[in-house]
Length: 127
Image (cartoon, rainbow, N blue to C red; front, top):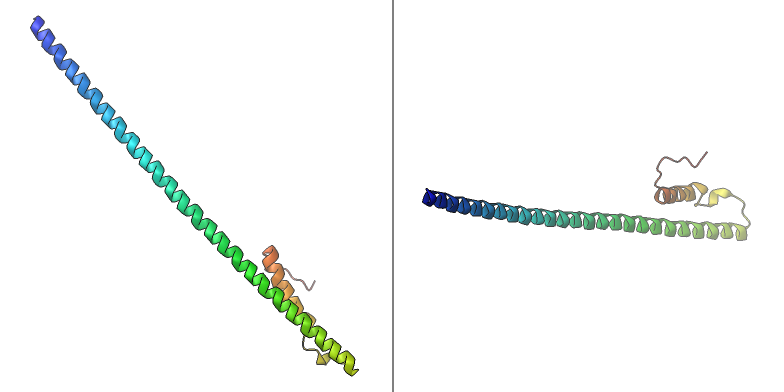
């Protein structure tokens, strides 16, 4: 009887050791895969954050160049307008038909500048 109890106890210890070993292996497996999942998530987030930052930077640069283009157009129109006004003044003519740059040209540029500045498309500046 004692021999069978000792044999049973030995088998029970081996089963408990095997169960503990399997539980530890499962725990290690779960930790390893959870760590890999976290790493993949962080890498994906980092890629998306970089892509978003790049898109934002590109949009800002496009806006800056568009505004710069409009500002240079404004300066050219103003110079042309002043030159034409000075020419008309020196010639003594009072006819406004001789001026090729008018308020509508400048208003168009200012409207586009406002669109870029405040991101509005539907403002009616003529009111």
